[in-house]
Length: 421
Ligand code: SIN
Image 1 (cartoon, rainbow, N blue to C red):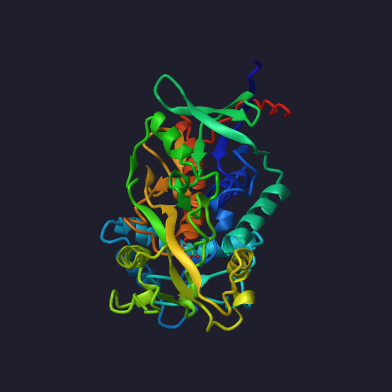
Image 2: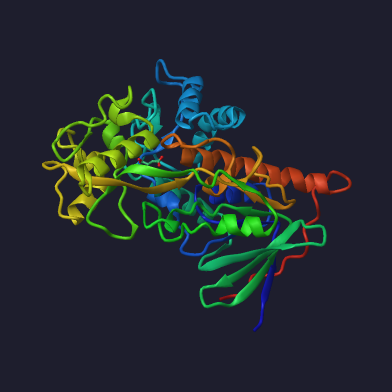
């Protein structure tokens, strides 16, 4: 079988927030970038994110980056890297501004965006879009920017393995298209932005693409992984019976804006479990639900959002999912259980996306920067993807200069066009 070949300066695997942010930055700095994604460009986890982006924009009295740092450290149960937390969160406001400059539109007036609150946050600091469709808007804006820039995007291509030279450095990527045809992308830098591995669990909020192949590829290439056991279970995922696979999320912002959890007898079981009650960090709420289910023998608990004004317009995604399941959340409580949601660990990187293997980078959910510790704070994931996507692109550029004996940018190899499919 013929193997097609192409040459680039950077191959990005994955087309979510981290991958496309890095790809756009690197292309903007003049690198030849190819993005590889195994499904359609918008099929990854980013597009499913509901609640928003946690960020301190400086316009909410009483909130500060220091408070955001503190909330993140508390949620991470003592296992975050405090340096990573401080640096990544401090970069958040500028990264969100650049995302807005790329075309992402958030709810509220441009000069003072609307904010919501989620579990573990001591302030209303989560910006959102489309009510509860933040990830979809972020993905739309980035895919549109990539299309405008004519970034080569190989959809339907699975990353099989990193190519390595005699010294072990990554020098490209082997791929297979969805009909099993092989191809080779030669590049001195490969960035993994492949998302997490929620699909390893029977029940998850993650799309079918979240199978952990980025972590596996990185391990085969000689990189390290850490904290893989810290898989976050989101407390409120719509329960419609014992189904397997992706289930609709009921964003934590619904609780942030007043909904409460009830057991089968109608008691608010989070009262007394944690000072933040229904808005405790996710691990606390998921554990309390699991305990309640074991004690009562029920299949699910209920989220009562009937007192929320304007639920269908404020939370259109949640409302549509409930209606599809035959539930009217404006008049009846929503049946929910926890489900696998986020991989807090992953490929170990420094704060610039570098793995321990030269030429191999990772950013977003696939990476373990130390931001999340044992339990990610709500809505810190899109923020990390943005910040670390930018930082990884900057590292790729810096490392190209470092590899050139003169310190100047390395002359790119002659381009070989990507074979038409
Ligand atoms: C949610 O909206 O509850 C999920 C957001 C997140 O995972 O941070």
